Length: 290
Image 1: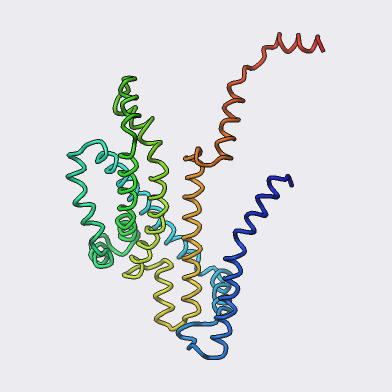
Image 2: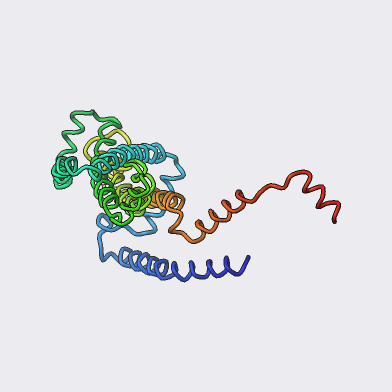
């Protein structure tokens, strides 16, 4: 292992151990409190029971179709809501008239409690995937729209005048100036939207669904299988972390100039491509001189 890699591993360990230590302390404390009967098992099951329930769910294979259903609803709703929000935000940032026409409806959509609208959406679209995807798309729409519009309108006036002096059109200014400037802000909204899309999908499953992790939580809660319900919540947390981590990885790849390592790697690749390839005669002459 090189010195830089070893140093990075040490820094990562130092950053992780406080949270890991606190987690161990909390688990031990909860196990002790539940084992001596201070809290009812129907309120707070022992962490060991939750662990065994989680292991049983994973090993039996009963949970995987529900994980797949919730993941599909979340990702599909996220893509639909994010694309719609991005397009409307770009149009609103380029036209004052469009901004004044769209913003009131976006605000109204945000302040409307979607938990109250979810039964109507399920009545319109049915009990299948469509209604859950629609709820996820609606709940993740607002952060993408607001962050995209704010990022698009945050460009410096001097930079826009420079592009105008170079006779750049609106599309060129949008692609070469506004969009790169707005990408960090856009991804901040996308990361928030991904977590909200998961919430929307689970809310739809709570109302009515045939499969999904939200269905399992409701089912186990009604059966008073609290440990199994907590195990499903842990699965939901893990799924949310995976989806959020995927967005972080995409951000590192797209917004490469915010990561020093990726920026250096990109510059190294570009410099390698720009180096002229020696002709066969040059290589032959070099071999003769050697």
